Image 1 (cartoon, rainbow, N blue to C red):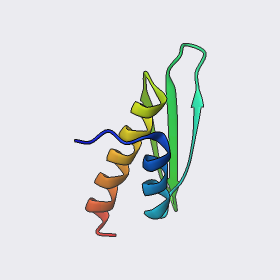
Image 2: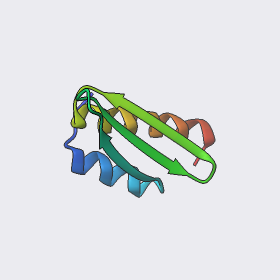
Image 3: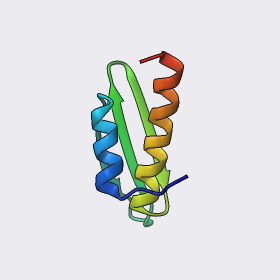
Length: 68
């Protein structure tokens, strides 16, 4: 799997119709939250880039399962 930059991962998430944002925790971990309609995805990782890539992976799984 190709690891994307934060900007590219965010771009793809938005193209799929999700709103998203990130926040850094005081312990150094990053959290990305994505929302679409009544669905919410929360991805946490040790780096901002890893969190965005995890969020994109999870959004892709939801997209495939919902058929959209």
